[in-house]
Amino acid sequence: MLIQGLGLIVLALILCQILAWVMRQRMEVRAVDQIAQGEIAYLRRLTEEAEVRTQTRIRQTDLAWSGWRKFRVLTIMDESDSVKSFYLTPHDKKPLPPFLPGQHVAVKVMPKGRPDPIVRCYSLSCAPNAQFYRISVRREGPRPEAPDRPPGLMSDFLHTSLQEGDFIDLKSPSGTFTLDLSLHTPIVLIGGGIGITPVFSMLDAIVTQKSNREVWFFAGMRNQHDHPMRMQLQAYADRCEHLRLMVCYSDPSPECQQDKDYHHQGFVSVDLLRRCLPSNNYDFYFCGPPGMMEALNRDLGAWGVPANRLHYEAFGPATVGSKVGSPTGSELADVFTIKFLRSDKTVEWTSTKGSLLDLADQHGVRIESGCRSGNCGTCVTAIRHGEIDYPVPPSDMPDEGTCLVCTAVPRSDLELDA
Ligand SMILES: Cc1cc2nc3c(=O)[nH]c(=O)nc-3n(C[C@H](O)[C@H](O)[C@H](O)COP(=O)(O)OP(=O)(O)OC[C@H]3O[C@@H](n4cnc5c(N)ncnc54)[C@H](O)[C@@H]3O)c2cc1C
Ligand code: FES
Image 1 (tube, rainbow, N blue to C red):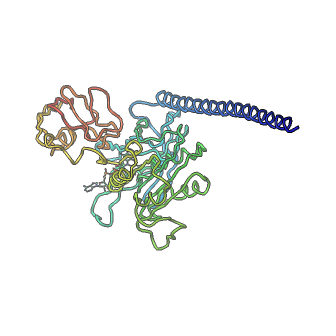
Image 2: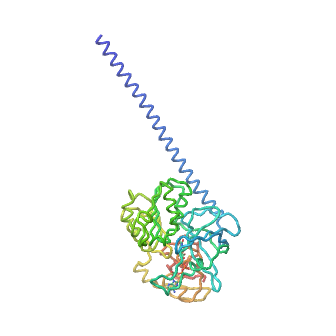
């Protein structure tokens, strides 16, 4: 009996082992199956994302135009005391290229009584859509600290003269400060002052896309009077669980209530980011005044954010992380001869003369220009002989054999078609 009982127990144990082995096998098969499914889904997503990127590029290239195109001002809206938004639609009623959030357009206007047109760049400040473009422009008026300074030419014209129904000229959207909408990685968007426009476009695109991408948005303004897109930002923050909004006022006015109208008193700094964000594992996109950009770039690097996760744009000649302002000894020692062929002028360049456009201005050589920061393409000039360098690379490189003289400096003696 005892032997029989032991036999049964041994048999039961063997059966249990076999059963456990079979179950393990089935679980492993299922796990492998799940991993394979996961990998297939992951690969499918990568393929779909690549497809979206390719399609967007194809549609952009197909619909982009060269040169200037007439746009009608549909609507003008106040965004703050000093910022107005202009909704623009193509006069020819043909489709618009689907720009990438963060890109800008060059705008040309010809105010009455001026001998030359004015050209400036403005970021598109809304999500890509097929109906209209929107730019949001801050009027560069005389400031209390410099009341005698004349207002900015273009921004003053747009604010005080341009009317709904008027026409302005635009170049196709361009620029490399863009957000890839086919990705789902977490991001931090930081806009200081009017630098909010390109990062707002990125946020608007994410919200329009109904993406669940984790987004932190830091808006750095003086106070609520200076704060464009205030209502829209708050509406998005109320609506989107994946969006965290931090409004920072450096000089809140007495009627502003902390935690209702704004969250933090002071500037947007890496110290603040470190207190808010759970880690530094984000892509950072920022645009704002030069001091803010320099500090963010430097301090995010010191916090351990790799350079390829820092994306930024300046609204003027940028020096963030560039060679400008720190020429090497040999650069300082360089002297080159520059021939402006059409003007029949030969002059000397040294690093104190600035860009080739500055040099042309100093010697009365007329070259049409707009942004003077390598963004609008207006100053493109053919190089007949010699080599140039860009201390700050332009947002879009011009064609081979030409250069953007507003940001170019010589690397050798030069002959320019100007
Ligand atoms: C890629 C890019 C995107 C941009 N996006 C935007 C945007 O979305 N929104 C926006 O508002 N801007 C944007 N800008 C800036 C914009 O292009 C213009 O630089 C800005 O509007 C000022 O142009 P303006 O013609 O009004 O001023 P300008 O006439 O060029 O004058 C510039 C400043 O100099 C001052 N000034 C003029 N004359 C004198 C003088 N004699 N002495 C002393 N000071 C003087 C003016 O008061 C003004 O503050 C962007 C720029 C770039 C490069
Ligand atoms: S003036 Fe705009 S690119 Fe040179």
